[in-house]
Amino acid sequence: MTMEERKAKGLLWTDTEESAKAQTKARGLCYDFNHLRPEDTKAKEALLSELFGHIGQDVWIEPPLTLAFGKTVSIGDGVYINSNLTLVDDYKITIGNSVLIAPNVTICTTGHPVHYKLRPHGEMYSFEVTIKDNVWVGSNVVINPGVTIGENSVIGAGSIVTRDIPANCIAVGNPCKVLREITDRDLEYYYRDLKL
Image (cartoon, rainbow, N blue to C red; front, side, top):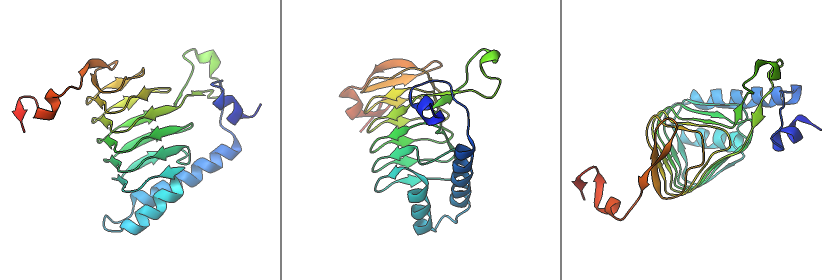
């Protein structure tokens, strides 16, 4: 079984020479993206198309961006990603349409076994992360391997998301838990008691 097959089955795997080459290429493209002038939007678009597996229309990513592979990531339409996104994208990351990602967010598909005897050569496991349509991820959030965040939900700033979050709710904390559902009141009050 190849390391990619092991990864896809959720088994322990290690880096290969081939994956190291792919990471070097992706990090080079990321470096180029991070060093473009802000007004050079055409070059940004070209690099993002080369970097990611899929990138939708009207996507804006504010540098700096850090990632491992890039091609494992799919980004939908109308996505805004603020500065300092870190993608530990050894496996699939799917970001839906109209997603907002605040500064300093980490999305991680990979972890290591807890017991040191299971990681003498850097052994790791990977599970897909999915962020569905219309999600807003607050600043300094960490999303762990295998997590799905349901559509329209909001993840509060500083949260550590270790388990799936359902659709249409606000979830916060470490570990991240559902605080409440999003209701029609949220159409009337945009922030605390500030009314439209």
